[in-house]
Image (cartoon, rainbow over all chains, first blue to last red; front, side, top):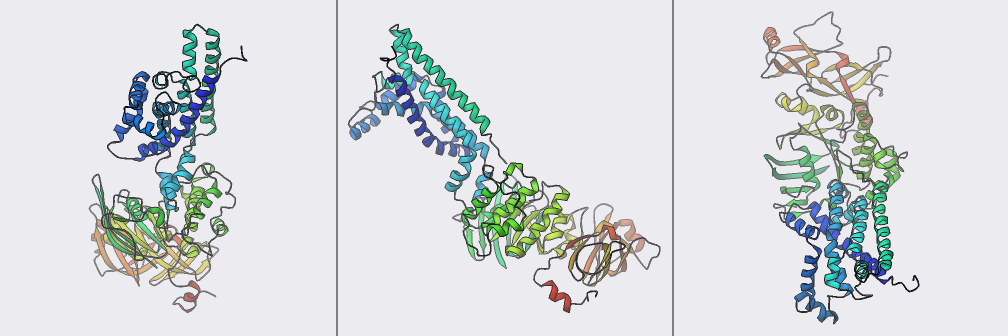
Length: 226
Length: 382
């Protein structure tokens, strides 16, 4: 069975999670830094929008994303004229959906970490001649290392575990959008419990390992401020 | 000498800071005032850390801030060293890393200032591989001091660097700070609310109260002004006198010092005869006598004339006595003033116990001590 077993949903999930996590850390860093340091009144609005994926049913989020990505909608149309292919039911569409869906899992740990670092080290760096960007890269980021590890692991794990959004946006095209959670669902539907067991076991192990990583990281890199 | 021009305002909650002063910076300038008088805020405005301050800040005719914040040179371009009350070392770097951080961002280059000079001056060679959270409070401040020196700053701002350090450790660090202006040619503004730190180190002082600078001048002058007594310290208030060592009595553990107004015996100070010395005489430690008295244990009797009397609301009256060109202040009761008939112009003798006198190694601003003592008015003992 192992020789012919289709592990491609697992690899696809891992790839999707890796790309999503990479994109998320880049997108979430400035957003979280802004949220941690701003005194703007629209902060609460942005915070609420960022946290929306936590409370929205994934199917609702997936539905809206599907509408936005359809070739008749501005975003979907723009993508189509740019690349010649549709955004919906593509791997790129899945990445976009996953980034939005997992956004709070990257932003919130980073925001908390930046808030814990505080203004003190930034001001100290400024008086030592470091520009704000320099101070962010050389002082704030290393001090917020634990926040980055937490954000990365949570984003990765959450993306692997998603189901509703990818089903709505990606469908189930083997090798392109059929990720592990959808594959398991289909195995169960076709009463192929053996295959469902293999993939589910792999998921369980993966989830456990990633959570272990978070707790080990929290031990290894304790936040030391002041 | 550097010139710092300030014309700044800042309001938050119910507090308004409004400072309009041009300050000549040389050596250590103490910024003294009670808690909440706006000292730290003013320091942060000078450093460029307060973006809400309006007005003008200029240093040696280079404008740092002008026109309600339209011109605003960011903190990292001002080349101002800042030593925070809580040191703010970078905990992800060791001590050497903290120093390197500053050194490679120095805006100006100095031929005389390399890392080894600074490390040696602040005795940091044993700490270089330590991480900040393993250091004591005093060690941390020494590293912070070294770190800001390595940026080759145009001035150093210190915000109560010794506030969280206990008395004995404090006395260990004071000499390092005291030496900075001379050794590294950088003026220092030193925020404190401890009058003994002012007396020990500063040449000049800015007295701050309720968001304003209410007096500026040499420390000896400001601390002997009766009208400023409520601000210069209620119980610790006293006069500071610049004196010179004339003799040591090793047997009795006393040092004799002279100033333009008399002589004092103080607890032994281990510095050569002829050295300048600053002594502080607290007002509450001075007894007034109308004539020569005998049978007293006190060693010091200074002859002078009453040049000022300031009555407090309570029992206390502060009496300023001019002895030669120096002033001593005595805090007596209202009853004593009436009983002795003390008034302006009354000749009195100020009696001071030797052991109550604090002494600080003097650091006269301009003159070179050796030259002055050889041709000065007080001949050193052979």
